[in-house]
Every structure is written in C-alpha cells, then in structure tokens.
Amino acid sequence: MSTSPLAVPEGYDAQPPLTEAERVVDIFVAPSKTFADIRRNRSWWLPYLLLVVCGMGFSVTLVHKLGPGGIADSALRANPKKYEQFKQLPAEQQASQRSIVGNITTYSLYAFPVIQIAALAITALLLWGGFNFILGGSSSYPEMFAVAVFASLPSVFRAILGTITLFAGDSDTFNLQDPVGTNPGYYLSADTAPWLHSLLSSIDLLTLWPLFLMALGAAIVARVKPASGYALIFGVWLVFVLIKTGFAAAFS
Image (cartoon, rainbow, N blue to C red; front, side, top):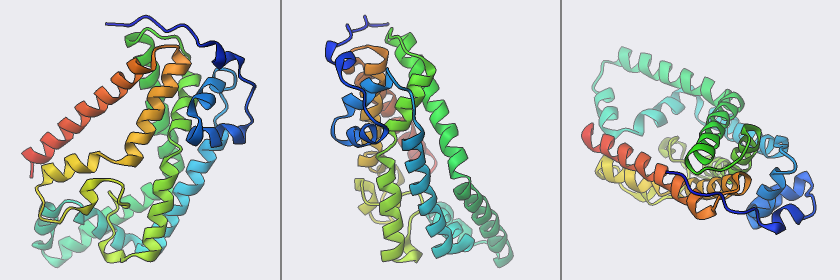
C-alpha cells in the first residue's frame, strides 16, 4: 500500500547551494540540508573518498598488526561453537583452514573500495525501489546513490575507532566482526547464548545512525513523509534482525 507524497517543503528548494565540504559537515549537524542539496547536486565523491580513506586505513592497520594468521583466528573466534570444533581438528587441517580464511579475509580487506561501492549501489537500488514504488515517491537512482553514500558517513567512526582499538588493545582478543563497543553485545561474555549475542549486537549505534540518515535522506529526495521513510527502513531492519537472531538460535 502506498502513501501520498508529501508536498515539497518550500525551505528545501529555497536554501542556498552548499559546498562539498558543507554537505559533509551538515550530514552530522544538519542532515536535512545535505539531503535537500542532493536534489540540486548529486555529487558524492567527497564522502566516498572519506569512507575509502578511513576504511583502507583500518584494513592496512589490521593486516599489519595481525597478519593473515591473526586475522583468520579473529574470524574463527567470532563463532565460539565452530571455533571449538576447529580446535579439535588435526594440526594440518587447522593450518589449512587458517590459511584459507586468512587469505580470503585479507584480500577482502584490500578490496574494500570495490566492495564498498558495490554495497552502496545495491543499497541505492533498494532505496530507489522502496521509496518510489512502495511509498509512492519520485526520485532517480543517482539521487538515491548519493543518499546512500552520504548516509554511510558515520561508518568512518567505526573505522577510526577500530584502528585505535588495534593500536591500543590486545590483538589476540580483537573481534573482526565487532571491533568497537558501540552495541550491548560487544560486552557480553563468550558463553552468552548466540541468539542473545546476535540480537544485542544488532542494536548498534553505528548501524542505527546510518539507517536513520537513509530514511530521512531518501524521504527528502523522494518527497515523501519522513515518518513513512522511518517506518519502511526500520521495519526492514527489524525483520532482518529477527531472521538473523532466529538463525543464531537454530544453528547454535
């Protein structure tokens, strides 16, 4: 069921154009201004550059501090039950699995710019389809791609904090899947029920913040009510969290 688009607020089209730097700053202090400006200028190179620089800084630090073997151990420790099974394997099989996991993860870290832009492209497609065809809005794919890039900017804090954690913390206990303590699941003990860990780890500040920005930005660009955008985005997020939690309960 679609909703009627909201009339375009006069102030959005009347605001003066923003510079590239102003658009980046405003995403943190006045995000509606940045998203309104996307209707005038769909440029996204600066926020994408910041995402890549910070992301690659984290990747290079991770490989330097842990190496492929340490990265493999961190990835394997993320699932305690499977890690216990892994430790029961013969030494040769352990070495083989560590090598495979470590190499694949390392290559993925260095391929971050390509993976990032592919993920943004898919996100933009989902936003474009959801806000145009479900909520009855009016937007173009390039506009939604710019929204996806700008809304992802809070992710730079995950990369920065993860890099600091690598330098300041114990490399042997570093969790590649949950590198910084921005969710309750980060502070749970290793023997916590996997479903509970999955659920609480999903309530992450650096996940919810970009989702909020996507909902707001896509609503402004598509000219629909922000409340409808929040309902769509966080409704999909809730379904995803419940499915992920269910899988963790079923296969743990």
